[in-house]
Length: 275
Image (cartoon, rainbow, N blue to C red; front, side, top):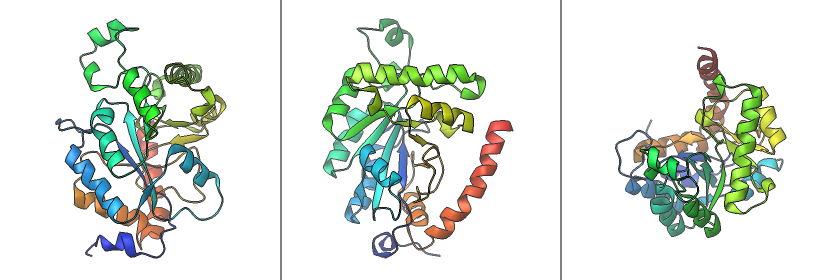
C-alpha cells in the first residue's frame, strides 16, 4: 500500500487524537538519540505545510481534559533530558514555523558551574546539556515550556516508593527555584524510558503531576488516560518513516491502529517490567 503525504492533509476524519512527537538531541552527532537539524526541520516543515498546529503544554492540558473530539490537525512536540541543542538548534526551527514545544528536564543534568562546579568538571557529557541560564531563556521565550523528567533519571524499578516520591518532589523544587515559577506550574512529567506502575503514577499525582507521559506509537485519544499519555519517539527518523507513522496515527487507518496498538504495548511493558 502506497502512503501518500496528501492523506495527512485531506483526510476529513482527523479527530483520531493528538500525535505527540518525542525527540532528544537535535544535532549531527552519531548517538542513537540524535536527530540532525536538517531532518528535524523537514519533519516540522511537512506539518506546517499541511496546516498542522502545535499545542503548548497548557493548550494540550485543556484539550486532554475536555470531553469530546480533539482539536483537528493538532500535535505536540516534546524533548527529553534537556540537551543543549534544544536551545542552540531546535528553538530557531520552532520559531520559524511558529510551533510550541515542551522540554522535559531531568533536573540533575543542567550545567551550572557557578553553583555546582564539580558537576561540570566531572561530567564528561556536561557540555551536551542545557545550563540553567539556557533553560530560563527557553522558558521566557514563550516557545518552549520546561517540565519534569524526574530529578535523577534513575531506573525507578530499583527504587523504593519513598525514593521515587523524593525524586519527583526534588525535581519540582529545583524547577520552581531555577525558573522562578510556582510549583503548581509543573503539572507535566515524562517518565524516564516511559516506564511507570500504578503506584508510581499515584505518587506523581500526589506530587502535582496531572499529566504523565510514556512512550508508545499512538496518538492521545479523547478518552486517553492522563497518567499514560503516549508519545512517539522520532529520534533520527528518516522522512518517509516519519510520514508513515503520522499517517498510521492520524490518517484513514488511525482508528484501527490506535485500537490495536495498546495490546502490543501491554506485552512490551510486561516484558520490560518483569522480563
